[in-house]
Image (cartoon, rainbow, N blue to C red; front, side, top):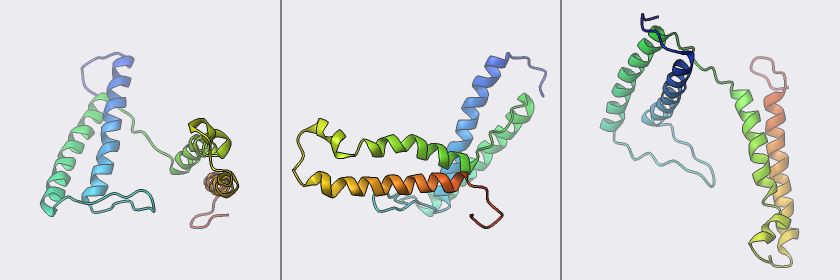
Length: 148
């Protein structure tokens, strides 16, 4: 820890910002290593050149060295992010968005065709069930390498 004395409030403000910066660098590193996400409705397009990727990785390494020094000098504790807890909390948060897709809620945008609700609501219900299943799996006790 450095000889510089700052208040706990200042330290928390600094820590929050540099932790978010490091989290963002994790995304940049993933993309610079060619890992992009692809789903049926969301896709990341890797349009970085090899030179850009290498340059970004070099800068990330240098910036992380600075963050490490800052961590050590100010005594900032790293934020440990539980993947299981994140999955569970994002499922809980997103559940309400899926519920809002039910036809009774969509009527706020105007009248729906007569047969739309019978066609669409079961699809929404199935998505909610799958999201709930993911949430439950993330909360279940696991043995290494095996989901119960």
